Image 1: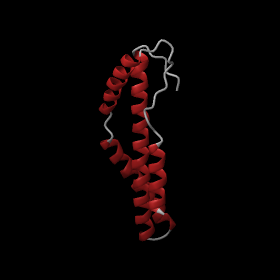
Image 2: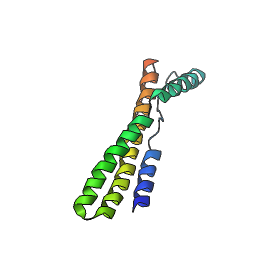
Image 3: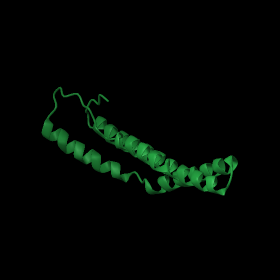
Image 4: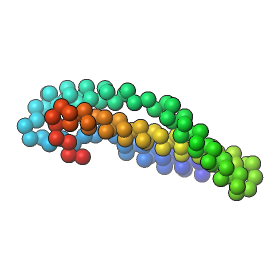
Length: 116
């Protein structure tokens, strides 16, 4: 079950990218590629490590309590580990979305019309 949840969550994080669609009217491709590279470099300032750890801890606590309420200590342990995976992955998804927003905002600030 945990492997299925992990694969499902990993698949959803793979869909979260910083792909940006800009209006091509009047676009100088060389300038755009340079600006895009610079804006993508800025996204790495978003720290995911601490947030991922917090998400895992909260997920483990909630999952453990749910498992304990459902029965015995093995269910509590299973719930905690599943909750940790889900909590950590949720923070990764949030961080990925934030990184995509950083790239889009950066390009928008440089005068590009963002379409997505």
